[in-house]
Each structure stands twice: as C-alpha cells, then as structure tokens.
Amino acid sequence: MAQKIIRGDHSRMAKKLKNTAGNGIGAAKGKLGIMIPGMGAVATTFVAGVEAVRKGHAKPIGSMTQMGTVRLGKRTEGRAPKVKEFVPLAGLNDLVFTGWDIFEDDMYTAASKAGVLDKELLDKVKPFLKSVKPRKAVFDRHYVKKLDGHHVKSGKSKMDLAEQVRADIRDFHKTSGADRLVMIWCGSTEIFMQQTAAHASLDSFEKALQKSSPEIAPSMIYAYAALMEGVPFANGAPNLTVDIPVMHELSRRNEAPICGKDFKTGQTLLKTVLAPTFKARMLGVSGWYSTNILGNRDGEVLDDPESFKTKEESKLSVLEHILQPELYPELYGNIFHKVRINYYPPRGDNKEGWDNIDIFGWLNYPMQIKVDFLCRDSILAAPIVLDLVLFLDLAHRSAELRDIGIQEWLSFYFKSPMTAPGLYPEHDLFIQSMKLKNTLRHLRGEEMITHLGLEYYD
Ligand SMILES: NC(=O)c1ccc[n+]([C@@H]2O[C@H](COP(=O)([O-])OP(=O)(O)OC[C@H]3O[C@@H](n4cnc5c(N)ncnc54)[C@H](O)[C@@H]3O)[C@@H](O)[C@H]2O)c1
Image 1 (cartoon, rainbow, N blue to C red):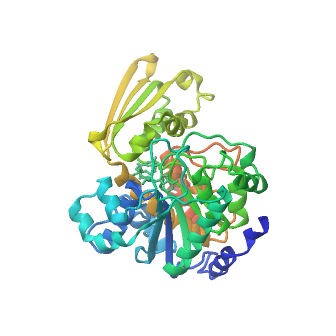
Image 2 (tube, rainbow, N blue to C red):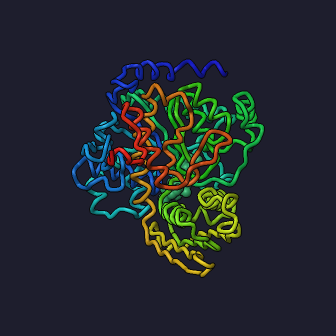
Image 3 (spheres, protein in one colour):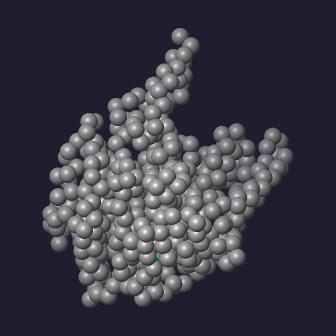
C-alpha cells in the first residue's frame, strides 16, 4: 500500500509543478480545482462570492490575496505591490469547484437554505451555483450527532470509502480539466478526538482503515484520500483530521502541503488582537468570559457537547499561548477563561459574540472591557477559504514549501494553527501577518522587514 504514495496521480501532478516561473515557483497555468467536503454555509458563501466577483457584482473584501499589498524594501522606496501580483497565484477565473455533502442540494439550493446571501445576489449567479452538485459523502453519525443525511457512500470498510473518495478526486481531475487540485474541509465539527496509536504511522493508519476502526473519523478519510493523490489539504474545522503524525508523514512524502485548524473569523480574531495589546503594555488579565449566540446549522451541530468540546479546546488554547502565564505569573497566572456557544435559531448565520474582559493596571486597579461583535460568520470565513486555497496551491508549486508538510506561515487564518511537533503556535494576529508576508518576501528573494529602522538615521 505504502508504495502507491509515489505513483498514480501524484506523480503526474508533480511533473506539471516542475514547470517553474522563477524563484523555484511553478507558474499558475491552467485551472485550479477546489474540492470541498461540506457544502454548507461557508462553502456556498465562498463559491457564490467568487462567482459574484468574477461577474463584477461584488468586490473580494476581506481577502488578503485579492486586496492586500506587501511592502518591499525601505519605507522610502514606495514599493508595495499587490500580493496577487507579487507571487504567482491562480486567478479567480481559473477556479473550478466540486464538493461532497450528506444532503443532495446543489450549491444554489444549499446557499438559499443557509440564508447568508440575499436572493437578489444569489439569483445573479444561479446557473453557476446550480451546476455545482455534491458527491456522496463519507459520513457517520457517531462523529456528528446532530446531523443525519442519506446522500452517503457505503462500502465494505473505511479503506473502501477512502478508495471511493480517491476515485472522486481522479474523476474531478479528469472531467474538470483542472491542472492542479486543492481540498479544503468546510464540513461540520466532529466529536472531540485525541491522537492514538492508530494515527502514528501510515502502516497503523491503513490497518485501522481496513478494520474500520472508530479512531478514524470521516474527515480523516477525505484527508488521507487527498494526500494519497498528492492533493494539498486545509482544515477549516477544529477536528483532529490532518493534525496527526500519519498525515504529516504523507504530506511530506507526497509533497502535498497541509494546514489547519479552525478558521479564525469572529470572536477569536478579536481575542488574538486584544490579548497581545495587554501583554505588550504589561497589563494584567484576571478573567475573560466569551459567549456567543448563533442559529445556523454549525450552531446546531455545536449544541452537541461532544462537538462543542472540539470547538471549545480550539477557542481556549489561544490565550494561554499569547499571554504566556509561565513568563508573567503575576499578570496572567490566575486567569478565569470561559467560552460558551449557545444555539439560538432566530439569529441564523448572524452570530453575536460577547466578551467581558477583566483587566488590571498600575497598582492593581481593576478595569473592564466589553466587546459586542455582531458579525456574520460565513461572510468572515469565505475570504479565508479563498486565500487558503490560493496560498496552498502556491505552496504546492514552490520548490521550497511543497515538501515541508505543515505550512505554519498560514497560521494567520486559524484558531489552532498547526506547527511542527513540539513547537508552540504563534497566535498573535500581527506576528502571524508578519510571518505570512515575510514568507512571501522570502519566496521572491526580497529582504525581510525587521522594523529595526536604524538605517533611516545614518
Ligand atoms: N463560519 C465561521 O466563521 C467558521 C469559523 C471557524 C470554523 N468554522 C467551521 O467550518 C465548518 C463549516 O461551517 P458552516 O457554517 O458552513 O457549517 P454548515 O453546517 O452550514 O455546513 C457544514 C456542511 O458539512 C456537511 N457535512 C457534515 N459532515 C460531512 C461529511 N462527513 N462529509 C461531507 N459533508 C459533511 C453538512 O451536511 C453541512 O452541509 C464547521 O466545522 C465550522 O465549525 C466556521
């Protein structure tokens, strides 16, 4: 089985990547196929948005690849090209899509049900959305208790299901005419799982697939199939999925980059901006209470305690890493941090996230900050999906990035960024942003920006 890794579709794709366009980065020629397990609110808002931008109905607001710039050289040089002109990214017109879901709805119907985008906009892109129909999903209610659907594959074993997903990938590759592929998980949050011996190596994982072991969640089956086919994989949910040794190994061996976990969109985005502020000014934090109400299907899934636990772990980890209580015990050694998510159907996708933050300053005097973010979950997530698929494809074409496995430079987009084993993740949004832009500068042979600035005072 292990030998299959270096054969098949993977090697065909690798040959195409050798067609480089300078600095060891292959040109973004031809179509990029985007494969999405989970065609719900986030996925449909992303695909409808791409089509709306292509047709000139809207602007790609929130997308760093489409609207962002990179400063190059000294502040006096005035060089700040757009990201998409600085590095060779696939153009929006070259994107083609497919996906899997447990419901049979095409993307127009699914987007209408999700209720994120208004009918007027959806109708402008209706024929295109209607054409994107889900393939049968790999699904098991054990891992997402609140959902049940019948558009589901059946097979003799989990290995058989993985082979079926691999066949889907090859089919899409052929029928769409895509040159390159990327897979991004936009499916529901699965129950909380921890790494076990089954996830330790390719051998143990494949044995577990053959035995249909409960240690293999559906999201892992998609990820395994993608990596076996040499297709990069991003994980938008907090599930374990690709954050296990077998996937790190497969990713490196098959030169298929991976990244995750859990899109950083609303409350956690603001948390990773506010917490570094307190630390930078050495202000103490005694408590941080975060609660949310939301009424979309994601909210319904998270109403199950086992799925909520997966999300909770992801949301809680952020403060510990940013505030470093082991370095600053008097300031952060005794924080009470609580995160709640409440399913409240009237709000639909328009989540409300409240934060009460108890901080203390000079001579221990207490202060409070209240944040009330009336956000739109999928509106915040869709541009992240776009940037991730374009950057993962870039990494796949880069001689330097394609065989390192985890793409830590994409931490900017995640609540629980994946890192090399044993390394703590960077959660501070502005460190993440600098890391991302310095990686782009590095790829193009430009100088890193250190912000030292002494050179202006010679
Ligand atoms: N919107 C945000 O701001 C945000 C932020 C971080 C993470 N996320 C995560 O992104 C994911 C998608 O969010 P959403 O709002 O689109 O949820 P959603 O419920 O609208 O969509 C998820 C879709 O996945 C499908 N699905 C579930 N299991 C599947 C499987 N095994 N195979 C194929 N399809 C499957 C469901 O049927 C559903 O259509 C969730 O895990 C969510 O936690 C969202």
